[in-house]
Length: 206
Ligand code: ADP
Image 1 (cartoon, helix red, strand yellow):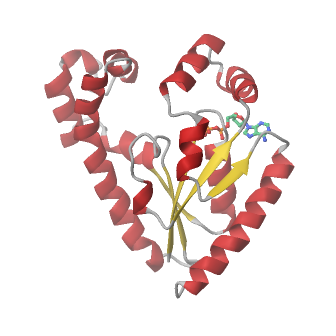
Image 2: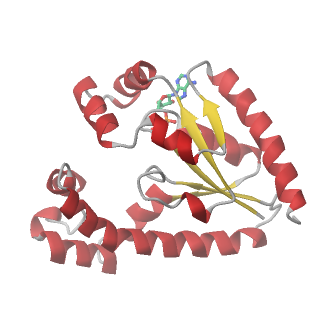
Image 3: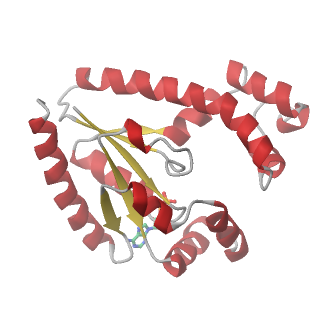
């Protein structure tokens, strides 16, 4: 089995590439989704977060108020580290569980991809057999996010500035997918990547 990390700066097209890989037969583990699920009302992780950051991070219904939490940790490294120390181990544990189960799935093709937005920032590249980094030019990323997600340009640029640089992500990349062009070009690049991943998975005995 080949265990691959997938990352990219916000708006670069990481989710798009994850979907294309899943369509080709990869098992995709979604770290964002796991972290959302782990923070469901009533969960131990959410209780720990509320203990640490106060009841203002909960809505009256007992759900996580993401915007409130984001305001508390944005630009505050220490608070962010405290939050990560609560959430990251739980996410990794659940990801490992999904990863171990992957070969039992029907039609397993030997490739597991962990989609992790902050893979470069959280220094975990060494856990993987290889890392795929999705890239697009900054102005393209800004344009897509403003159009598709309705974010303000200022917000997008602040988020990009808070993440690792393209150069830093390149340092951990085994493969780089350039998603600056058309969806068809990206699909063709993912086809080439998929062929290579399958070949490597077979070499490792799957
Ligand atoms: P990320 O997961 O890296 O934040 P997404 O995959 O969600 O980025 O892509 C950001 C937005 O840009 C989405 O709305 C997506 O549909 C759009 N998008 C992604 N790739 C392309 C492309 N090659 N051409 C046009 N739009 C794209």
